[in-house]
Image 1 (tube, helix red, strand yellow):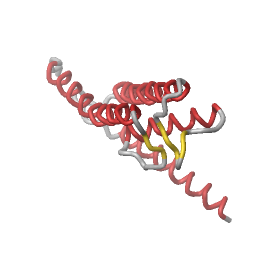
Image 2 (image 1 turned 180 degrees about the horizontal axis):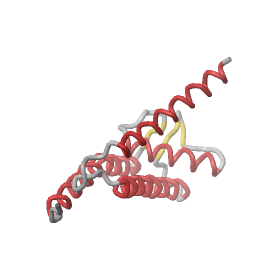
Image 3 (image 1 turned 120 degrees about the vertical axis):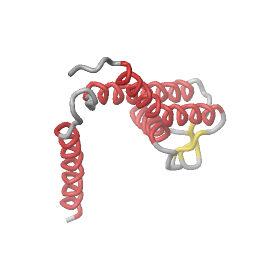
Image 4 (image 1 turned 45 degrees about the horizontal axis):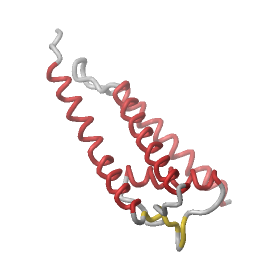
Amino acid sequence: MGTLFLWLVTLTAVTGIIMSLLLLIRNQPPYGRRVSIHNFLVLLLVYATVIIGFGCLYLSLHFKGIPVLVEGTGRLTGSLVHLIEDVMYFSAVTLLTVGYGDIIPQGLGRWIAMLQALIGYLLPAAFVVTTVIYNENKPNRL
């Protein structure tokens, strides 16, 4: 019964995401002030690149022996796949939110996490500002 419920919740969430994207695509503003799918994909790729880049930084520092992340009561441990999963998760959570507290940065990791969080807050603002400036400088076509 629990598995069926989880599948139903997952299906509902995926359907909601797809319907939201379709609604965004269908209800675009008039030409000239159009929401660009290209810009959305560029922003998505920028976020993915930043997440992967910082995740690689955390992972490389971990392999150098510099403790940057703590899970529970000790350093991150486990197989390589588990380490990659943990650092990518921490990187995404740090960039997109303020964190959950299940994986905690320490030492140099705190400074890196602060920089990543700052980038996470500035990316949307920079994207909006550059899009507005681009649209204002574009000649109007009738």
